Image (cartoon, rainbow, N blue to C red; front, side, top):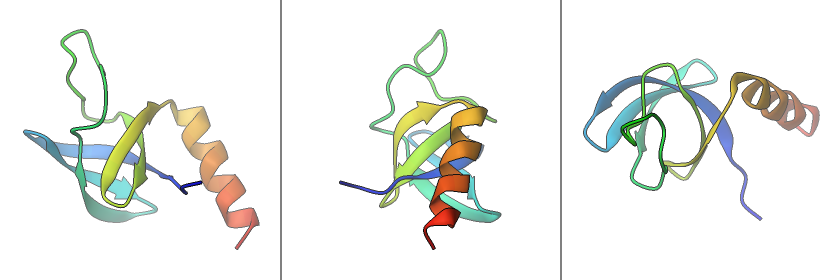
Amino acid sequence: MCIGVPGQIRAIDGNQAKVDVCGIQRDVDLTLVGSCDENGQPRLGQWVLVHVGFAMSVINEAEARDTARRATEHV
């Protein structure tokens, strides 16, 4: 099992992005994220689930907030 942390894409440069994770800007690789928009590209403001520096999947805002809430319950 891996633990993913939700983050919101703030800037994109090729396959790399600056993602806001709990208020901290992280460098994240977008290579593994599938089709994100009609052109198959990730977009600003989109939420992703991040694990060890890679965006593993695209999630919606409700999923992001629920994941963050559940993670803090176990800390």
